[in-house]
Image (tube, rainbow, N blue to C red; front, side):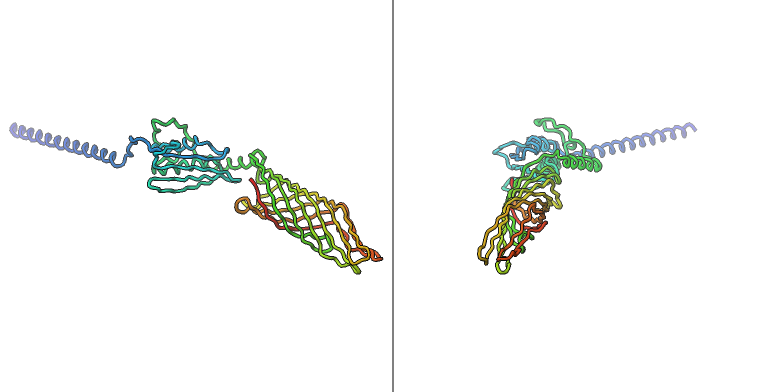
Length: 373
């Protein structure tokens, strides 16, 4: 019994030793495989740190006074990548950026021209409601040009360059509800007249016809100059000074005939402007008109020329279509009431009425002109 116990005891010790040895080998193998896996993952999937010097990029920046300055674009670019640095007038740079911004009545437009190595060139354009938003978008486009992994915002940027100044954190994007509230606040401010305003001039030529001024429908023409104070899409007061004229054909009044001519100046006051489309605008106006209405007799023994002072008040509706550049075309209709209504007659020897000015006159015209600046 003792010998059997000893053999069993030795067998138990040998088995335990073999088991402990196997377990130890397995643990060492697992630790080695884990170490190798981490090393491979670090080699192939970890983004290498940028140890080399950032690439210098020559750049220029042109923007109107109401847009952010050049420092804002540079800060936005630096917050998104550390692989490049913007240097004004760097002659040895392999590529260059040219940033140009412009302000239009309802939006801001930005243009980024990229000159790359070996003569490669590209152009990107961005449009938005605010110039600050356009500058931020162009900075992201420029950063992606040199670094495909550039961060989309300042908060997501990689570690800052040691040579770069610290960049303040960028506010988080607004939620859809906040964006709608911001847009409504902006529109409310614009409608109240607190948005920036500018003075716009215009000049042009109209051609049309007048009805009731003469016995027959007659052609008319006018020259005009205009000034407008643009404040918002509705409140945009303007004033127009025009010089108009018309001549009638011969009007038969047996046994004679008569001809008429009319020359007048008008001052239009237009307090509102409605933008039906981006380029189509409607403008209601009131005007005062003063001038001369003359009639000339013919075919009678003693033909005479009679001139009467002309004074009338009225209203008009004008539709303006803005075309390419500063050019525009317009259509308008007018109604007016003369303050003095004259009657023209021939005495041959009896009194013959040739024309009596009615209580209400009308007219329409088409025209074209230019705006500045």
